[in-house]
Image (cartoon, rainbow, N blue to C red; front, side, top):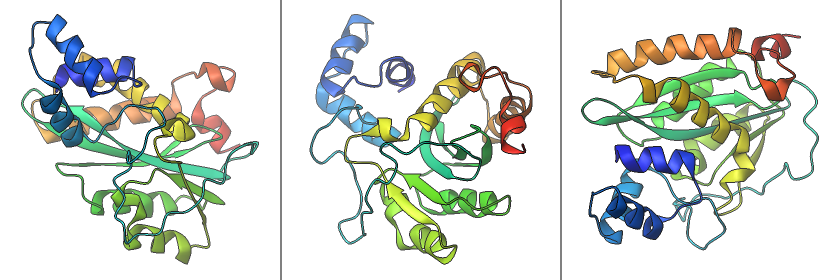
Length: 228
C-alpha cells in the first residue's frame, strides 16, 4: 500500500492493471485483483473517465457540477473537500480537508481510521465556523452524498456541486494539496502513532497556510489572499 500510494501520487491516472505491473517490476508480485482490493481500502481510483468509478450510495442524491467555466475571483466563493490515504510506520489513517479554492487556504482538516461520514462532517462544521462559501464542491463518494453532509450544506444555503463520475480533476485544487502534503510532509516522516501524525500534520498545515509561498498564487501565502 505504501508503494501504491507513492506511485499513485506521482501518476494518478494509473489503474489497477498498470499498478500491478509496476509492482512486479519493483519486486513485489501482486495480481490485479489484489491491487484492486488495496485501492478500494485506500479509497483511490485512477483519474480518467470510466463507468461506476464513484461509490456513492444509490439512495443518495447526486448534484450537478457547477464550476465548469466559472472564474474563481474571491475568497469563500468556492470550497471543496476530499479524502486521502496517509501511511504510518505501521498501518494507515485517512485525512480529509476543506479548502478555499481562491486562496488555497486549508480551512479545516480531520483524521480518521475509517472512511465514515463523521470525520468529514466534523471538518465541514469546523470550516463553517470560519466563513460560508457560495458553492461547496465534492466528489460523489458516499461520505459527501450522505444526507448528514448535504443537509449541513442545505441548512447553510450553500449551493452543492459534485464532480462528474471519474473526473477527479474537477476537484484539482484538493488533488494538488494532497501532492504537497505527501511530498513535503508525509513521505519524509515515518509517523509512529496517530498522535504523531496529528501533531506533524498540524505543524505542516500551519506552515502551508501562513508561510509557504505558492507559485500559482503569484508567490503569495494562502492566508494573505484568504484574509485580504
